[in-house]
Length: 412
Length: 106
Ligand SMILES: Cc1cc2nc3c(=O)[nH]c(=O)nc-3n(C[C@H](O)[C@H](O)[C@H](O)COP(=O)(O)OP(=O)(O)OC[C@H]3O[C@@H](n4cnc5c(N)ncnc54)[C@H](O)[C@@H]3O)c2cc1C
Ligand code: FES
Image 1 (cartoon, rainbow over the protein chains, first blue to last red):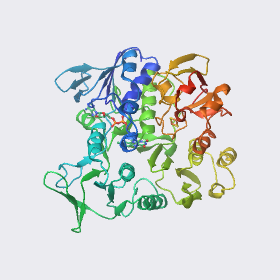
Image 2: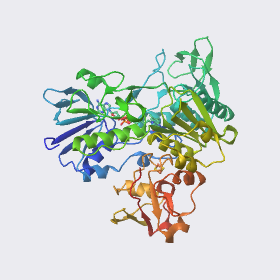
Image 3: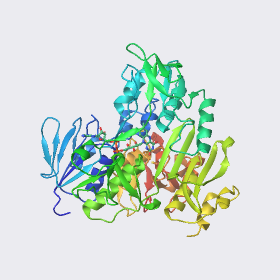
Image 4: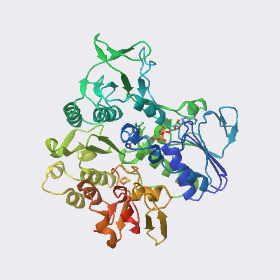
């Protein structure tokens, strides 16, 4: 660490912001510069499709820390500035406008971009993606009771926006190419529950449906479907996934494959350059070091902890099982683990009580949980996964035994 | 503004003025008081904002919801006066509140 005097962090999102803070609290005394393209200091994105969209949370609450704290800790935050080039041989980052910043260590925390709809008319007025404060500020102006909202893509962000839309009195249709919502992220069992909940709240669904054009003169009027049908819309929100922002890494010749490839210490193929957060693809310890590109607050924070420990030569943090949450209506979904490859699902609680957990097993091994209004089941399963404790599906299915007891009795 | 005393596990005290309307968790995070991680940012989703409410203040801070209680069940070193600090809203009545931080949030 002694030879590292200047650290540049590219991307002032949650990963970049947390990394800067952890480097300082961990004892880094050198120059620390955080560069972000957005006009804000680091903020949390989860509320963007939840309480910020509904107007229940304001900008001040969205910011991860007050701007003054960066000054106090001598972290230079360059806002509204885009980095355009990384020169690995001279170890410099070039900013838009030509300014160059030398680095001894460079942390790429460039996040991801929301995918734009790949159809004609996607640039009409009233058509949005939902990733940044600017996106939501623009959406909000049009979020008026009675307006027709078409959400394209039934992932978490799309469904959260649909739920807020209903809460604010909009007329909401969700359009999804797959046969069910949340197809990539939860089992058909959990997805079916969410489909019913949204339907009960008055959301219409067009499933197995492909939008092919956004129609309208200057503003959107309707979404044209592949079968010729039209879905009338005043507002379209596309929630069709994200693309990791890897262009600088790619140009710099780093190893990139749907994410900047890093090792357990967050190092890229150039050992002066690190990558964390949504833009990185890293081995996940609890899943036999499978290379994953995770899109979550957990992953952003953990990446920040790891990179700070690596650069400062300190003990790396214990890796958590990947975790995530989603708020829709009065339902809190909490997910721990990675469910892909499961061969059995066990349920605790009942769907009709709107409080249940689905545990996913691969053979004997518990690999993931989706818990709806069941935070104890979520935290308990997370601990079982992290400690690699054994528990049988039958034990978990027994509602008469509290989750705490199950976890306490689980064997290694 | 209500004054809140945050006491780190090693005994270090931070006396802060925290605006009404913020949560006890936000009061710590916005002032860089260590010991509260608050990974989920106050969404009651992570249980990394665990504090012990000084017994004299237990009643005034109210009872945790059943969701919060189930999360606390799994917090390290949970006690009768354990709370998730993101779920305690600062009000003028909480002027003088004292909370202690656990050894670790993970
Ligand atoms: C609407 C929404 C809801 C979400 N809800 C949840 C949730 O409930 N739970 C959960 O766990 N996760 C949620 N997530 C995901 C979570 O917010 C992200 O995984 C996390 O923000 C990733 O942080 P990051 O710092 O890696 O990337 P980002 O937050 O994308 O930050 C990267 C920053 O880098 C900037 N940047 C990129 N390139 C450059 C450049 N060349 N020069 C300068 N700056 C650059 C970008 O403008 C951006 O500001 C949600 C995300 C969204 C969008
Ligand atoms: S901040 Fe996550 S539960 Fe309180």
